[in-house]
Each structure stands twice: as structure tokens, then as C-alpha cells.
Image (cartoon, rainbow, N blue to C red; front, side):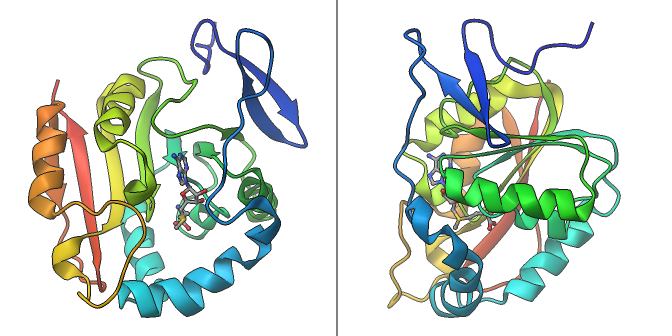
Length: 229
Ligand SMILES: C[S@@+](CC[C@H](N)C(=O)[O-])C[C@H]1O[C@@H](n2cnc3c(N)ncnc32)[C@H](O)[C@@H]1O
């Protein structure tokens, strides 16, 4: 029998192709998205024209090339992405993987859903959930991804604990995130930024090996974290 993706005690409801999680009283868990669901259609343009060049001092095409290189040999894996956004994962992840996307924004996930279908993803599910407290069952995923979003999460320690809970024993996490030592000091980037050393310490505290990758793209650090079994 196939293992359930949802942990015991949680329920999911499918609406317009997205899974929502309900509490004990069957109320849907709701979140307040960063951009607001109504402005989701502007997201890709804001990232390309404003956030990448002005905030990160980096290049979005180079970002995608880095991700493509990292994921070009990944096939048939069960992969969770935290903070899927508008689904730019379709630009670098091969559609033969079993992909689970998640985000607090329904507006962005609806855009992601269309992109994934157009790209030929057949085996995917999208969930409205906070990355620090997901409904997923333990030791469920081969890989996890989080791009450009770690700084928004309310508690990085809760997030890493959640990551550890839902990854399989030899699971790998891939992440890109702005870091303070690489950013232009005159620029303000939203959320909480952690240095490479702080990230290393936090991941190691939770039993991960922390592996920085040698890419240069403005304020961004690219790294992997591997669960040490
Ligand atoms: C800058 S966007 C990055 C989106 C996507 N990963 C990408 O590379 O284009 C940040 C995303 O984080 C999501 N987000 C913010 N806080 C979150 C949380 N606590 N849990 C899950 N997603 C969150 C936002 O809704 C938004 O989609």
C-alpha cells in the first residue's frame, strides 16, 4: 500500500486543484500572503525587473542556469518544494519527478499549477501550508527545495526541524537565499537574513551536513544540506 502523504490527524480538501488543510473543526487553515493573492499575476515581473537586479544585485537567468545544472540529473524522485511561489520550478526540475509544491499563497499556487501542467508535469500536488508547520507525514521525501524564501519564514529553527521530520533518512535539501555578507549594505531585503556561518551552525545543530556551493550571483548563497544518518 502506498504511504499517505498527509500525517495522521490532518485532513485535506481539494479546491480548484489546490489542497487546503483543515483543523479539528474542519475549518480551512488560512494565511496572509506576502504580495496578496490579487497581485500574484505581477510576481514574475517583480522578481525579474526589481528584486533580482535591485535587491539581490544578481541575474535571474543565471539563477535558473545554476538550478538547471543542479537538477539536470534528478529523475523519478519524490520532491517537496517549500514556498513554490508562481512555479518557477518548472524551469529547472524535470517533469518525470513526483513534485509536491507548497506555499501560503493560493494566488501564486494557481499560477504554478498552470505552468506545471503546461510543462508536462503529471505527478504533482500543491498545498496551502506554512513551511514551518506542514501537514506532511514523517520521512516522506527524497529531496526538498527552497528558493529565495528562507528569509520569510517565522522561525528558521522550526523550519529546519520540520524539514528533518519530513525528509527521508538520506534526504537532501537544496536552497538559495540572500545572505547579509553578500548583499549591498544600502539595500534592504525583507525578512530575516542569516550569514553563511549562522546557517551552517543552525543546520548542523539539527543533524545536517551543510554544503555551500561555489556559485556567485549577487547577494545569493546556494547550498545543500544533507541529513547525517
Ligand atoms: C520571493 S518568493 C519565492 C518563490 C519561489 N520559490 C521562486 O523562487 O520564485 C517567496 C515566497 O515565499 C512564500 N512564503 C512566505 N512565507 C511563507 C511561509 N511561512 N511558508 C510558506 N511559504 C511562504 C511567499 O508566498 C512567496 O511565494
